[in-house]
Image (cartoon, rainbow, N blue to C red; front, side):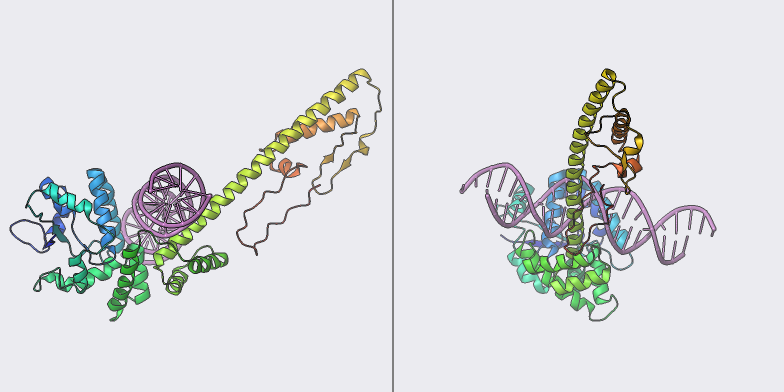
Length: 361
DNA sequence: GGTATCCGTGCTATTACTTCA
DNA sequence: AGTGAAGTAATAGCACGGATA
């Protein structure tokens, strides 16, 4: 198979960079379907990603154009001060079939293309000379292309720029070497799995602070030989996991709470019925003064006992029932509920201490 | 001082991939 | 070997706050 690479659109009049303005026009032209498969093939680590994106665009049809436009606007918006995230160089890739046939054949080849492998031509193109014509402007763009696309996305661009210092003379080199590091990662994985050491270290950092400032992010990334974006994503996902875990714990707690309250309510209702029945059968039975009731000093609630069989106790029991049914609306009564369980917390870290809970009465 | 815009960041939902039972 | 579930890296989109013009 032979790869034919051409700069600009396929029109007869080559205008090296005119296509940048016409990009979307080209893309939407049915006769240029092959042009969708352009730019960055095998040039750097993100060649794979770009190919995947193009493939996704292809498979999802024109419906994705809008989101793509949004993305573009976002990236251009975010990148306009430093560098454009849009590729400065667009390589139009044509796939001449052996029988010289149609675009169908070319798309078939596209489908058969292993995005995880460098195409031979591209592998040779690591130095940039193999893809572009020697006299073309493209070769002078090669470095920039590698550098900026290698950063991956907007946030990496920023991070890389911050790490290297945008205007420093040696930055391109540094960033470029980073990009080539990414090449290895990107080519050898579809999805990175962090090593145990990396995960453990990130976990340790997360224990100290569950968010990162840019400095910490960069330091961590450097230390773990990861991209800052990866560190950022890891922390994001870690926070999400923590929150999810907490939600599960909360849910479990509320469930238990509900069960306990239901059971207690049932019991008190039953007791109340018994007391009323007793009162009706014997109205003068043991009228004890209310002062015999005990009050919990911490929650300021009247403690009821199952052995109390006075009318006053019945009234008290009734109060308890009313209180328990209002626990969701009245915070005070909620806190005062004798069987109110302290809300458990998911503590991922051993050093974390649960908040102080008042002693249950 | 109020307003609009830009930018960075976090959160959430979702996807895509890997691992394991 | 095939499969579904669980775990998780990665992406996209949105909201919000701070900085600046």
